[in-house]
Amino acid sequence: MNFPYYFFGRYLQSKIPKLYDLFLMKIVGDKFDISIRSLGTHGEGVGDLDGFTLFVDGALPGERVFVELTAVKKTYGVGKLLRILERSPDRVDPVCPLFGRCGGCQVMHLNYSSQLERKRQRVVDAFERIGKLMDVEVLPCVPSPLPLKYRNKVQAPIRQKKEGLSIGFYARNSHHLVDVDLCYIHCALGQRVYERSVALLKSSGISKEKLRHLIIKTAVKTEQALVVIVTGTDQKKSLARLAEEIQRQCPEVKGVIQNVNPHLHNVVLGKTFEVLSGQGWMEEEILDLRFYVSPASFFQVNPAQAEQLYRQVIDWAELKGGERVLDAYCGVGTLSLLLARKAGRVVGVECVPQAIADAERNASLNCLANVSFVCAEAEKWIQSAERMDLVVLNPPRKGCHPEMIKAIGKMRPTRLIYVSCDPATLARDLAMLQESGYKIDGACPFDMFPQTAHVETVVKLSTKL
Image: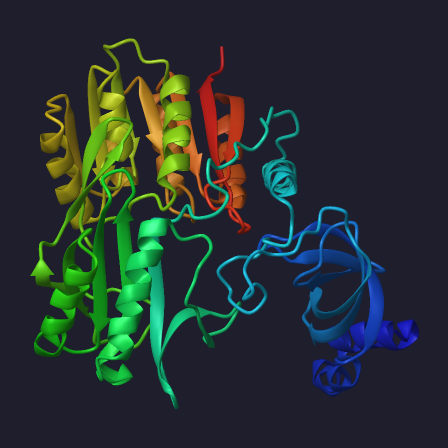
């Protein structure tokens, strides 16, 4: 790369943006070799070019690669991997032939032990860089019992091609659909139901204008499944025979459900569900409790690993039998019910009405009377709540609302357990909790999504003496 030319471009960007746009047309397309130092948030290789950060899909730490510059942003660039000059010893051949085209997996080319090490390091880096948390003990990342064939949910978009329906998954960072017949991270039952459902949909003659998504939800322990077909308009007459045939060919399918979503946006499910064949729910088992799973229910997609995570939460909760527990962002009540078996009383709070309805049904299903559920925004509800001994935080990716952190500081529960799906927002929230008078007793990452860049983390906190 022509370095004086490059730095002249950076000068133009800061001083004369309009000329910089013309300048970009010349430097995009340049080719050069670069050393990869780490993995990015989305599993891409990260390298430096004299202080300028470059992201390269498919490259691994420790490798030297030959890349083509494809985009230049204000603070970083994007390169396309052309050739590996020095190969990492951690690189493996992906088991899936669609890896690199399908966007479902990002790190299948990295051996599994290295995936775990990198995920732990991602948590450490977020703690130190974002939260300024330098002395937190981060345990080794807990491996998934199943690095492959672990997912209990398939969500496949449907499109029309010249040769017929295309059903699969999006390519990375795009809405280009890649046809997928076999997914190596789907559980065996989910894959079997997916294959039969895809074959029947493709032979049905129903046009893509009427079909949006195919969703398969499976209960691994009870060997049950639900099939959800998302349509743009009501298609129950067109789908009725197909639904019956899916159940005939796959006896494990408890029900086939239509979801109508007339809106063209990124939200997959609409508000209307209608059972086409069978029933509209199934049951799954987690740590000897049974759970009602509806088409819209959120349920951990890696149930075997979820059990390990829940055991960690229960262990760190250190419940003796009389404690009052708040499960904030409780979803369908999975953790609430597991904790209720050891606590005096548990309150689960969630803002999604359907999730609360499922949680209440789950409590009844398991005959647990010492747990109750509230449909409310947790950060508002907690402000007028009685003092709790333990608060479990399990927020969405964006983390806790600042009002939640503030309310916890006022309530002063003795212990906190934070379950996070995003290291960056976790680090931010932990820093605020430290300022509110809590100390971090330990952090444990869990590989809930093998072959991807995602990591979940459980953190134990207690009040400072």
